Image (tube, rainbow, N blue to C red; front, side):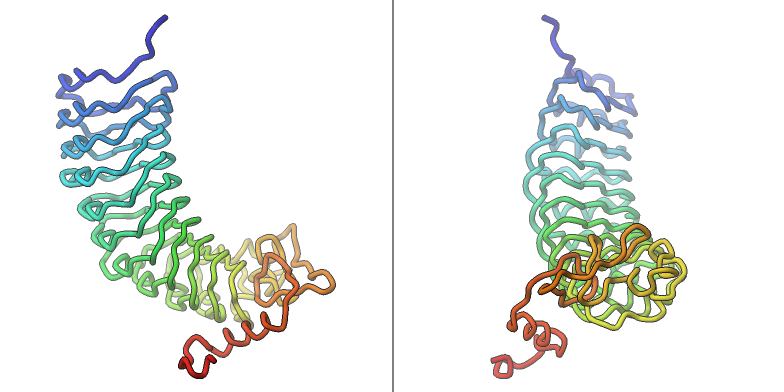
Length: 337
């Protein structure tokens, strides 16, 4: 019976090698040999979509100081990201560890990758908080960390340092706290995807002033307050998705009449194209070309703009909504009682 091909340890003798691409290889049955760390001229290491690789990430890969692309996505990588992996990868521009079964958190040492442009570590089962050292990545343009189990807040350092970020995708994690207004300093930002987390507090008005922001999705969170009018004044914004939060009226007229937002559906749907009104709902929380906001069944209603479901509420629920509207969280403890 022929043996399945593997990555031999003596590959380290190919010391002039600059590109090692074994991607899309379903026949490869191997671990990642530590000897790859001896290929000091290597610039590209791509093992992506090679599902036969059953391995952890060798710490020795951190010795590849000329490496520009490290792609280990979708190749059954397990275990944690080694703490020493990022110490010497000073030339790394693209890091893709997505679609694996990693454990543990994102090491703080990732902040040492000063030339990193793309960080793609989505759907990889990572936990813990986002390190504040992400703010050190001055060359970073694309940060995709969606589909993990991150908790805690978005580090304000992402906006406090000059970063070239154009895309932040944190969809479907367990992040909480407020959306940092400091992100409004990211003048090149085009896409901000925060859907399906546990963010609370108001929608930062400052983000509506970002000159290139074309897609902002903060749906399915616990955001409160009203939608700031700054978003209606944007010339770049095309997609604004805020359904499934705890938002209140009014919707700014500048949004209801905006000719480009949400495929220009405001021309026919008006404010419903931004968020369904009270007592109505839709699958997305706003009206689309194919689906209008639907009235709730008899005996059911909604408490917030942009609802995706209708509920049968009690008097206590209505009091809770009143508490939110009047800013009860800011009251002194005695008044809350």
